[in-house]
Length: 315
Image (cartoon, rainbow, N blue to C red; front, side, top):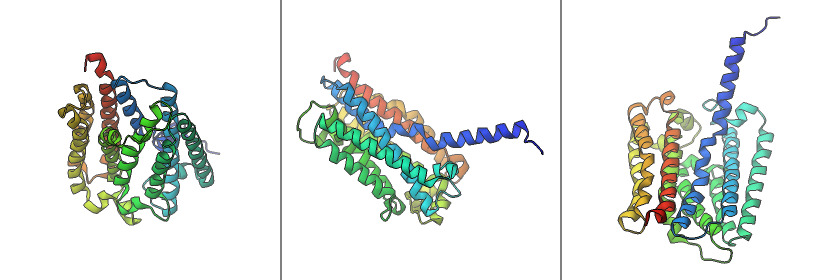
C-alpha cells in the first residue's frame, strides 16, 4: 500500500488548520464586545463607578450570542447553498455535521441569554428585552422566512443591533442596580460611530463572493451596486464613523482625548486603497473585511480608552 508523502500530509494539515482558523473568526468577536467597552470608557470618564463583574459578564454573554449568530448563519446559508462552493471554511462544510452545529448554536444562545438574564436581575429589567431585540434582529437578518440580509438590509440591521440597542443595554448593565430609564440619547451618541464601523465589516465581507451571492439570490449591497461603486462607498462609511465619534468633541460634549479613535485610520486607508485598486478581484479582496475589522477594533478601542483616561488628564 502506498503511504502518503510526509510533505503532502503536512500540506493538508496546514490547509485544514487555516480553514478552521477562518471558521472560528476569533477577531470578529471585537464587534460583540465593543458596545460594553465604549460604555465602560464613558462611565469611567464620567467619574462614575464601574461594576467589573457586570462588565466581564456582559463580555462573555456577548461573545456567546455572537457565536450563536455566526453558527446559525452557517446553518441558514448551508440551507440556501450559498456557502457550498465559495466558503470552504464554513463550519458545516468543515464538519459535515449539520445537527451537531445546530446543537452547539442553540447551546450558545441559551447560555448567552441566561447570562444576560442574570445581569439584568443585577442591574435593570430593561436589559433583557433590549438584548432579545438584538437577537431578534440577528434572526431577521439571516433566518427563514425573513432572510433580510438576502434583500440587502443586513447593514442597517447591523447598525441598529450593535449600535444604540447594544450600547443602551451595556450602559444599563454597568449602572447601579435598580429601575432606570433607557439612556437612549447617550446610547445613540456613543454607539453610532462604532456601529457604523461594525457595519463596514459586514459590507466588506461581500466583495469576494459577489458571483456566488448573485447566483443564490443574495442581493447584498455589493451585488446591487457592483464592486466598483461599492468600493467608492467605503471611504464615506469610514468618514461617517469617525465623524460621529469626533463631532461631540467639536461640540465640547466629549473630551479631546476621544480623538484617540484616530488610531484606526491607517487600517481604513489600507482598506480603501485595496478596494479601489482590486475590487473586481475576489482572491485579492478576500481579506478586506479583516482590514475593516482592524479599523473597527482600533477606532472603537481608541474611543473607549480616550473617554476613560480623560479625568487623568484633567478633562
